[in-house]
Length: 194
Image (cartoon, rainbow, N blue to C red):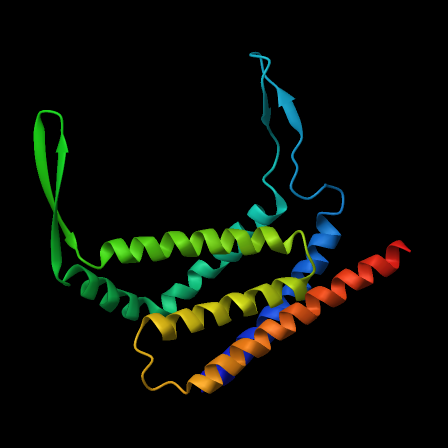
């Protein structure tokens, strides 16, 4: 079941990448990716002006348009928020000048916030990468990230019921495919220059 879901996710991710490539080629062709026009202000320093970069706009719309879909899982979200709020609490003491305050928060909240921030950085990086390289390269980078995440999860957490030979052979195949793609891309660029 898990392999089927991952395979479907890869196929859909690849299709999304192709659509993004065509969209960026059509609507962002008149701008140079990653740059904004400079406008001088009265203090003689320069600042960026104009619309957001293409990757920022794409990231906004992908997430904004997905928000209504949360209506279908609102009950699950409510249950999860209640579970978070009723989980074991951890007291933290904050000292500021003239007073000391104690704040009691759920113990899992720091881990949830750290996960959210790392996901934000990852998503922003993937969207920025999408504007700079072909869709196949982005998909390959995501496959490598998922493989590394899987290996780390198994190694760091309970991996007692894992068939280690299958795990490492899968990791090797992902690594070999990545190296093969990178080498073939480098050699084809050299051939085009000649």
